[in-house]
Length: 184
Image 1 (cartoon, rainbow, N blue to C red):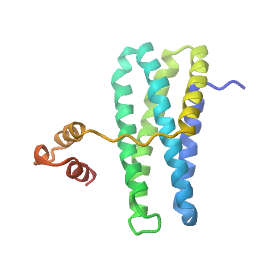
Image 2: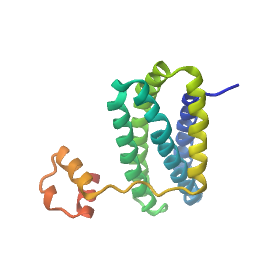
Image 3: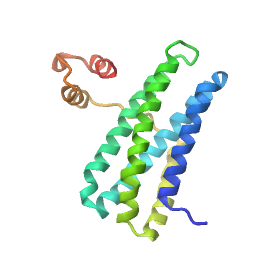
Image 4: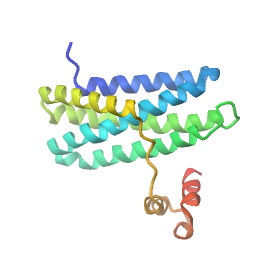
């Protein structure tokens, strides 16, 4: 059976959800599970951003805002992923940081599956969705063989987010202070 890109993306979502469950229950296996999660999540996000989202924006220009929003949600989830990777898997904070990541990813998946993927299915012909599946899979494979580090935001991007969230004194904060304030 030929799969289209929507099938592959949805399968990836279920795979990440299963990894979250395993991270909650397989405490002794957390280091390996974290490495797997980081590699898979980052490859998935980059492949979507490079192959799928541009195809949707081209086919349905009215969806550009959703595409941008999806990309921003990837970056926010990656920030939570970095926090999780920096947290001791056996420490008391791990479960809360994991819960924060799960919340960010779950929100993104719900929006993607209810808004972006249906728009993609409507705007892009079936044959193109199959082509996108191949491109998406190839991009993920390339990224999984040499996984990139999660995105690091610039100070200006952090200031823009802090301003939007109403954080006082953001303009005089260092990059690290901005990142910490945004996590609170």
